Length: 63
Image (cartoon, rainbow, N blue to C red; front, side):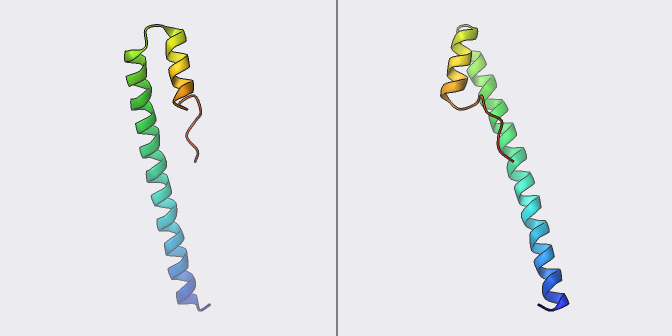
């Protein structure tokens, strides 16, 4: 691979990393919105915890 090809490949990796960071940030925002919605609909703490677990919101978003 030539040095120019290495630069292009490196730039692609950088763009991929940036895209992954943006996707992760978006997923965190969506998860937080979902948690607020569930909190607003739950009738008590047990209901909230059950809904959160059922929806898979009890796990942190993967990086």
